[in-house]
Structure formats: C-alpha cells, structure tokens
Image (cartoon, rainbow, N blue to C red; front, side):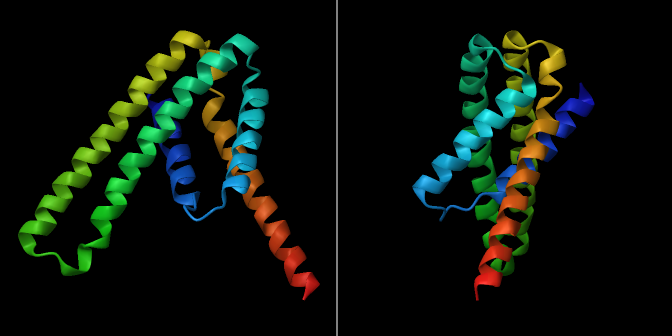
Length: 149
C-alpha cells in the first residue's frame, strides 16, 4: 500500500505540473475525454465501476489541484521573504504535504470500496502512460509545425 500511495503521489504530481491554465476549453475537454477513455480502458472498468470511479477520482483531482495551487502561491514569494516568513512558508509546505498524503489515503480507501485491488493497482501506471501519450502528441505537433515552416 505504501508503494501505491507513492505511485499515486508521483503520478498526480506529474499531472499537476503538466497542466496549463491557459489551455483553451475545447482542447481541455478533448484531453479530458481522452483521459477518461484511456484510463477506463486500461483499468478495464465496467459501466457501473466507471460511474463510481470517475466521481471519486475527479473530486480527488480537483482537491489536489487546489493544494498544488496553494503551494505554488507560496513559492512565488520566496525571493522577498524574511527569515520568519521563510520559516512559516516551510511549515505551510509541510502541512500541505501532509494534506496531500491524507487526501491520497482517503481517495484510495474510497476507490477501494468501488474497485477491486487488481484494478486499482493499475491506476498509477495508466496515469503515467496517458501523460506519456500526451507528451508524444505534443512532440508530434511541434515537429509538424517545424516542418511547415
């Protein structure tokens, strides 16, 4: 279970750093539909499992995104921090890190109620594979644009 939590942490961290808030709505919707289809297929979810899974998973991702945003906001002030502000920032980072761990544990226990362990254990790998697929698509688009010039 410890390894699963670590894998969930790594995969969501990668996801959070790869998001671009300026991505237009249609592209974001298309990417989200691809993610749903990809992960649903990789986990071999039934229709019933899928309905329950995506509600829990999307809630988790939204909460995790907010925690990451809070941590990012703290980083922006680093150059101008006094010693006491820096000390407080470190404490806030540690508290946020604990909140992330608690969120992952809670999500795992919620998902475990709707999915068997042999499907749930595939989730971190499916997330990584999806991110790799997206990066490959971006790379291909960049090559196409370069060749057009």
